[in-house]
Image (cartoon, rainbow, N blue to C red; front, side, top):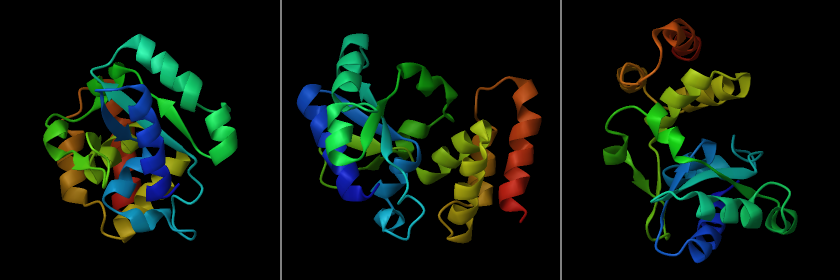
Length: 176
């Protein structure tokens, strides 16, 4: 996915969800600050979805957006990318203060992306191999910083049992 594709998904979502604010999560959120990551040789070149949340959240709008812009829907088949429409429960997993760190999506009114460090904290929590690989690339390119991410992971409202795995993922990314 590149910035232009992300903007296209946002415009389509906003046309259906009038008056709603769009927040972009997931890897595509990086495009708001680092559009070069979506270049043909960039790490987001093989990302074909944008994780979005409409605020204020309502289930009916969410279902409508999924039907119109979701995976394997007509929009996806035509454009080659799609929206993964999130539920507001995602907000419970974010580090405190995340709203103050939102990044405006260029040329998209009332559309914002989570910051790269907030994304890193979430990806460390999830810890899939593809997440760890992306975070290593982001670290190598000075897009995420160990000190900032470490501060944020301690602000996550997660069960204590999840912390050892998260810290192990942190060391995997920032100690290599």
